[in-house]
Image (cartoon, rainbow, N blue to C red; front, side, top):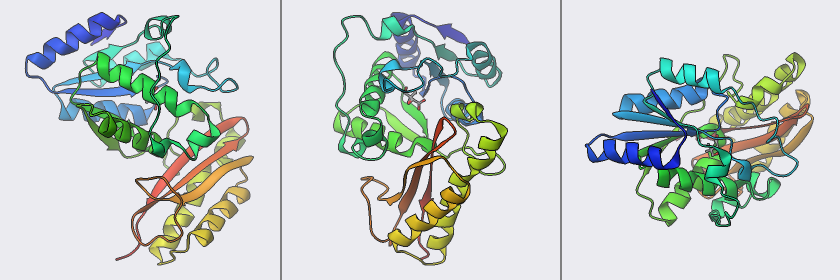
Length: 283
Ligand code: PAF
């Protein structure tokens, strides 16, 4: 496994293997890798000739009061895990090489970025779209793998790729969960044992929504109120949103007559968690 820090070098190496006819799979991450990330890297390895993982804690997607400084950084362990699962290249750029002191160009994120995370974390999706576009430029991959735990992020990246005609296929991948349902997240390590227990409220709320839709209930107001009850029962410490939305536009809907997605963001202690679940009414 080659670990590359230099921007020109990663482009030269991946461009070379691509010209050699190899299929390239890219897994962008911010490190602190867990089983969810490793499942993306393993899928890239299975489906492509060359798997490239990037590790970069992107400063522009963190707000001024967010956890950039204390975001977990576990590079040695991450490299070890990636080597064990057969990753071919890891790109670990320095922040001042990705963003020069004069950097001033940013991607305006697409419409699907407006609500939910986009509204609560102003500038977040501008930072995500900008770094992902930069990574796509630096690493000419055929396919990029993203976890569906960040459902809205996947929609933002899909829309950006469509709108800007970026020649890469986006492969959304199932959320990997702990045995009790908690979605894997680098931020789970912040949770105390009591908070870890209460964080299950997110999965319980999503399961309630799923059960109601499965039983033929399609009134969104009722589903959202059941989700909020589960979150309050946990209890979580703050609910940012618990909503049922259109799976493509991310706009609120009133009835689940077709595929929809339940999305939640809530704070447990000082940790902000997000999760979601696809809802499909019985046919
Ligand atoms: O999902 C993440 O880890 C990040 O938002 C991403 C896509 C790597 C961009 O920094």
